[in-house]
Structures are given as structure tokens and as C-alpha cells.
Amino acid sequence: MGQGQAAAVMPRMVQRHRLSTRLWHWLNAMLLYMLFTSGLGIFNAHPRLYWGQYGANFDHAWLEPGRFPGWITLPALYDLAMARHWHLTAAPVLLFSLLVYMFWSLGNGHIRRDLLFRRGELAPGHVWRDIQDHARLRFPTGEAALRYTVLQKGSYGAVIFLLLPVAILTGLAMSPGMNAAWPWLIDLFGGRQSARSIHFIAAFALAAFFLVHILMVLLAGPLNEVRSMLTGRYRVPEKRR
Amino acid sequence: MTRLLSRRALVLGGAAALAGCDRLARHETVRDALFSADNFHKWAQRGLMRPDALAHEFRPDQISPFFRANGTANPDTPAYRALWRSGFADWRLRVGGMVARPLSLSLAQLHAMPHREQITRHDCVEGWSAIGKWRGVPLSLILDAARMHGRARYVVLRCADDMGGGARYYESIDLIDAFHPQTILAFALNDRPLRVANGAPLRLRVERQLGYKHAKYLMAIEAVESLSGIGAGKGGYWEDRAGYDWYAGI
Image (cartoon, rainbow over all chains, first blue to last red; front, side, top):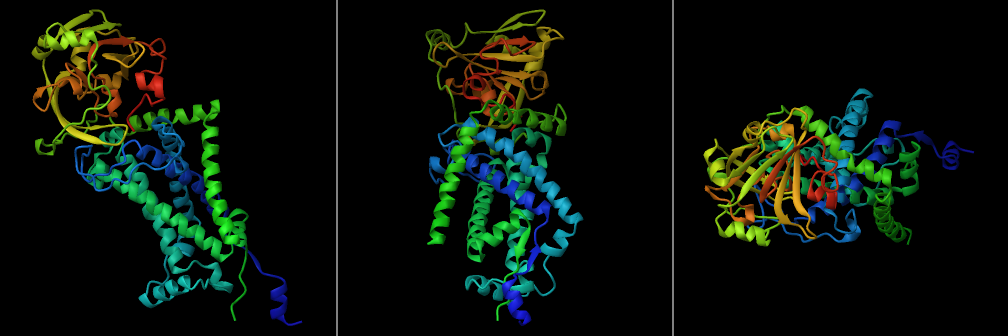
């Protein structure tokens, strides 16, 4: 019996995701779900978006998407007070868990080892090849499957270091209390209505990430991927010949 | 086929989770937890700001072209109509509760007191904002003139608008906001007497909180030790009726 055959019979299992990553992943999944749906519920109270400091019915709106249907809002029936309770309960948990995760991942080397781009990875040729591989659904196999591709690093990095912080900070910038406490925060985003618009855009960028993420999991083998995020155990895909 | 099933499962799962959240919110403990986030935000914000930290004040050229009115547009009760017809000459603001010297102030008397003018942003809980220039009497001056008791902890604002079934709009703030320099009883918006839609003859401005705290059509203010005996005890009409947060700094 050759070695290649043995490998085919006994797939190689590795410990892929750390406990901190797995816990944060599922906590985040739950929180972002609550925040997105309750956020749409809040948005339905005034479904118009503006740029600048102020904006109400008589001012120019850059987006008027109409009300979101009940199947995607929390609560399903319009209830601004309840939507705000869900949103404002989940939001601080998201903030503090993100901060803990950031510091934890800096400390244990996760960011440096797994998320930082390596030399040459950002070369246009390399990025283009990764885009082609993704488009052709040629996912990495063997050792390469244990590292994130440049597109994965880019999107995970963007979620952790850009989209989530921007969503949280624009959320805080909409608070009149925080405006008095940290006046610089609202200035950073160019006014309360701009902060509200950016908050909305960040929420939909996160939703877009979620959809692509789910699609990729389904295409890459949902069982193996979900198991690795639940238990950490990952079956290394056999090296393509 | 599996993919199609998975996608369908995803959508159904998502909808089921939402229904689950709604059902969860009916449990007493979950409700209590969700409603107590308000306390966290109050604690966090008060910890991050000086008690007298000011809301941003804008330049005259930043004022909204039209200041939207919300909530009651006209109390339209016989008593209010009568006050309005006389140009609010017969209107009085009663200052009572835990005070050593109860007051009854006419609009002319309020006009004669020291004023504060501020161009601030009004943020509705619904999400819109409007910037306007307010003029009014600092609430602290009135509370000092009435010699509020040291035991009082809240100021309750009683309004003329009947919200149905005889329930009048009311709101309440604590002393940190009551004595804040920008907390005024405003009688003018954008250099004109308050219009009925914006709360004539007098409304509260409490600039570090959302719009529903800014009680319109003021009739009386009352210093109290506790909010429990008032309305349903949650400190305001919408707090009692719809479950809005009492602390509306977020």
C-alpha cells in the first residue's frame, strides 16, 4: 500500500480555529443578526437617509428605500421601542467582544500569523490569480488550505478593522449624549445624518460579507467548514493532482 | 439540490430565528435584560462626560430651512384653544412639588428673566434631525427661584396635550440634566415665538437627549423624589405607553 493511498483512506485532520476565534465567530453571528434586523426595524421609523448635520422630511434625502418587510425586521411588527432595546442591548456586547478579540488576537499572534498580508501577497499578479481561483471555485488544497488566501485576509481584515469599528463608531456618533461627551466623534463623520448614512452603508456591507461568506462555506464544503468553526477540527482537503 | 435546500434552510432558519427572538422578548427576564440596557448606556455616557458637557452649538447658517414638528401638532383641547386665543396671556407655568416657594409664572414674567440662546440639533428617536435656534429661561434659574428641596431627585414636566383617554403628555429628567446650562424652557424658535406645532407657549430643551424628552405645551413643572407614583411610573408618557427608554441619550 503506497503512502498516497493511505492518505486517501485516512484524511488528515488538524486543529484549525482557536477557541477564541470560534467563540467570537458565533457570538458575532448572533449579535450581527440581531443588530442588522433590529437596525432595519429602527430604520423603518424614518426610512430616509441624508448627508450632513441635519435631515428631516423637508430636506433632500439621497436614499429612500421604503420600509423593510417584517420578515427581516426585529420585531416583525413595527415597534420602535423594542427594536431599540434589542439594538442597544446587543451593541455594547459587540463593541466589548470586538475589543477583547482584537487584543487577544494581537497577543496570541493570530493577527500577525494568519491575517497580515505576507510579502508578495499584494502583488497585482498574485491578487489576480486569487480572484481567478475564487471565480473558478478552485479552493486551496493541502498545506495551502490551512492558510487564508489574500482575498480571505482582505475581507476578514476589512470586517474586523474597518466595517465593525465604523459601524460601532457611527452608531455612537448618532447618540446625542455621546456628541456631548466626545464631540470629535461626530466631526469625524461629518455630522449626525452623515453618520447615520455611513452606519446604514456599513450594515449592508456587513450583510454583503455575510452572504458571500455563506456562499463560500457552501461551495467549499459546508460540513468540514462548519465543523472546523464549531469544534476546531478541520479535514485538510487532499492535494489536487 | 443540496445547495438549493441549504439556501432555503438558511432563509427559513433566519425567519425562524427572528420569530424566536420575538417570542424570547415576551419572557419577563429577557424583557428586563433588554430594558436594562438603558441603565448601562446612562452609566457609560455619564461616566464619559462632564456633568456640564455641552451639546454642540451650530452657526446661524447651519439652521434647518424648516424645523419639522412631531408628536402632537396642536393640543386642541377647549382649555388650550382658549389660552391660544388670548395669545397665552392667561397661561401660567406652575412650579410646584418639593419646593419651598411654589411659583406661578406668566409668559411676560418668563420673558423678563435672564435668557439663554442656543442653536442646537434636535434628534428624533425616529432618526431625523433638525437644527434650530432656541431662546428661553434656564430651568436652573426657575428651580432656584422656587427653592427646590434638597431631597428632590427629578423634575417632572406636565403638558397640555391630551394623548387620548385623558392621559396628558409628561416627561421627567434628573437633576444633572435639570441644572445643565443648556437645559432651558424655550419660548422662541428661530427668533419667533414658538408656533403651536413646536410647543407654544413653552417647551423644554434638554439638548443631550432625544426629541421625546423635550416636552412641549408646558403647563407645570414639579420637583419629586421618585417617579413611581406618576403615570405608570416609568417617567414619561412614551416610557409608560410604548416602552421607550427613560434615559434618551442614545
